[in-house]
Image (cartoon, rainbow, N blue to C red; front, side, top):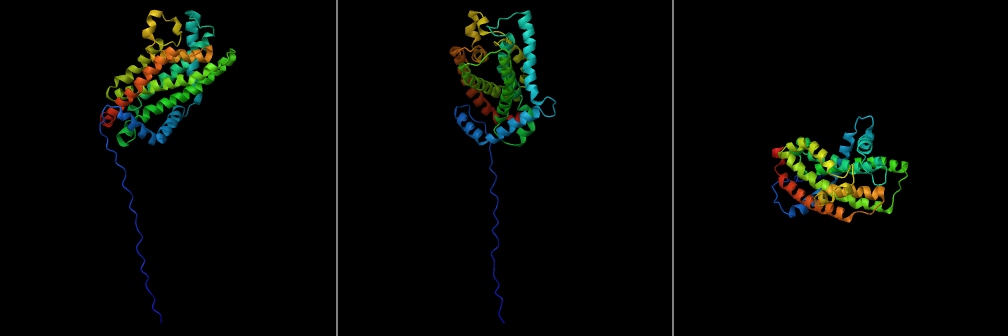
Length: 294
């Protein structure tokens, strides 16, 4: 009779889950080194930025009858009102193009700036529960609002293309300058949005004052009039507003077929390049205490 041999099987090896990474948030110093460390971390969280941007777009038009049509209604309504007021009653010059097309070409970049800045400035306060429970680079919230507003801008450009076809205004090779113009605008919006969103966490007056500031700011930019209509003695101070060079050059290269005003755009680019890193460094400096203050 053969004896059965007992085979001892070693117990299965249980793999313990690796410990979750721990992020210790400390107040960083206000230095350029924050830019490089923050940008590398932002690249790591790029999927979250993409997801939040899609979320902004879907929520904005969710359960609405017009859907994306609302991105067309706002600039179209503003164009009609400004055309009646400033073309019929005030009789502003439009530099050889129909005034409705002239003012629409100023409204589109301005609406992009206004929507992105007003929403990004209050974006942190609107996500209090998310900020206090989960860690992620907080600048993703303002940036997602800027990207969502840029999507609305692209949709609204359909009206501009349709009106240019209606008035038989063709595009020239100068329209390629729209790429650096929009790059300057996105840079400027991102910098100001980071500053205002960090201020809004501590001082809620920013969100209250924002509609008034933007309304006054619009009439200080060449949206309903041209840069050439500004008296020459005021132009050196007037051009320090980055939106002046952005709006004026957008109109020049799209509907007027003129070359870009390098001096105006250069001033806007310099101001935007200065504001973005300063705003980002200040934002990262305040990031560590946002969850406690908000």
